[in-house]
Image: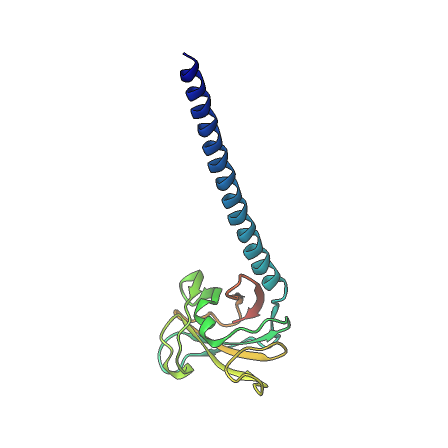
Length: 180
């Protein structure tokens, strides 16, 4: 009977030791994972804080030629300290709210198209230029101005109030009212 008690005590100590080891290892792994997630979240938020864009005063609307619709010319200033590389343009969002001729109010998300402005289809946007683009050509660096053209269908009603919103890949946005 003495050996059975000693054996049971040893097994009990081994089970408690293994359980404590597994619990401690799991806790450390969870804290490490949480710590890495918080670091990544902090990096993303820091990047957002350094990003700032502004839509310029000269938003102009012209009739689309060729084809139906309207073209909106927008100037965007990079007033932050984050650059936006040309491969990220497809991750930028452009929203347009306008009064369409004969249709009424329309809200549209406009996808990016890597083409020249003459080849734009309906409801697409593209970059037509960056100035001055001396450092890192094709990349939207701080203190540069990017010109985009947005083609919307149906056409924007003349002299109507419209609204545009541009959102960067890291969710920083700028919006502006303009006349159609």
